[in-house]
Image (cartoon, rainbow, N blue to C red; front, side, top):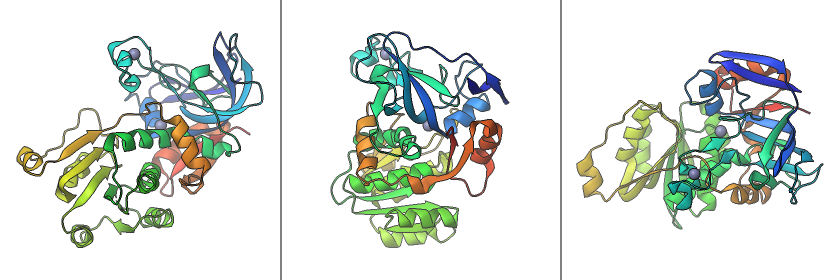
Length: 336
Ligand SMILES: [Zn+2]
Ligand SMILES: [Zn+2]
């Protein structure tokens, strides 16, 4: 089968590899769509703990092509997506029911071959039916599941006000999910005007250009500060700004991936004096079912976030688009 293999950092090759066969309890999925995300770019640049050579791709959808012994929930032809995270189910974190903190967390597209290929394998327990969702939308379930996990951690309250930094695909998913969870107002900021237009179309109460006037306008919108301030940019300096905009008793949601060795400053006296909470959320923690429901119901719209669709044969170009194209949102590889 055709696959885009990252053979070493900065090296990607289109290769013919043997089509994998499903072992006991495994499902072989013929890939229809696979999104490129920051993690894939980190793997490509050698900035992530991946095992080379690796076929990346962990946000995907497709149809079941074959099933291994003992698989009962799926049949060839079923339309599906899959949770890429495979916890060990026996380490102390797994035993505490915290599988996203598993000490030996494996992941499709990170530690084992992923979806930038004609076929991908997944354990049956990781596979989900998608009903009539489009394959493009179903390949957005994984990023939304990361957001949903964060929502559970942050515990949005009815009527909350939220401020989100960054109106990329993740920020736009956060914006919609936070509203579904009960926030009354959601303000979003970005450096790029057209991204703000998309965010406004998806229900942002206000979409502000991150310019010199932004601080003044934020204070106008929320004189006491916001209940929740979330960062979807992954820039440490933005993280620091969050502490200026959060109200006393408010929550700072650390979501965007900062470089692992970066640091951000905060004033511990402020955190103490204002009863602040700093909340991180990592990846997905059994939140696929909820994300599928949110997309199926129309509560969260994902199609407007897909900006580019390229075939697997143009994988190298797709990586470049995902990293550099000025008009990029979510870039997907489509295989049919
Ligand atoms: Zn991802
Ligand atoms: Zn574990």
